[in-house]
Length: 215
Image 1 (cartoon, rainbow, N blue to C red):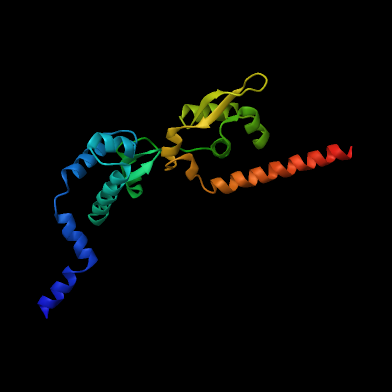
Image 2: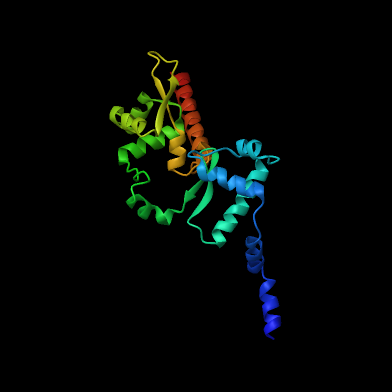
């Protein structure tokens, strides 16, 4: 009975995962882990594929999935995440408070409500000029913009073609990293908001057209 029970347990999926973890990872898998251990910025799957000899970015992501599976089963304090257009190893969120106490990691960024409002407008409408930000918020945005730029969450990305050629603002790669986003398209309800904006703009244009016709 004991032998049968042991055989049954050994055939379970969890036991199979454990057996797989006992096997040494491939050289390519260890190289991938080593590279991700030392880079300070997210590195793209395409770049990793060319650097380490993977056939394509999909193969890199498959390898990352295997590594993360090993980390999860071994209850490691870190895992690989895909943010800001690339891959990077991060410690798990539950250890953030303890790591900050060591002074070896940046302190948590605390944003005021005004900064969050401005950042949200820029994120969803970028590139955007300051006048549009102020029209939406109803207050001046000079100081808020300065602070967001200082924190590398927003940057000047060019000039508008309107009179005076005002600066255009957009979010940065740091913004994606801070909010854990792979790209700006991963913002919540991004497509729905764009569609709603388009519908509202269309209704306004139709109303103005009707008024012009009546007059």
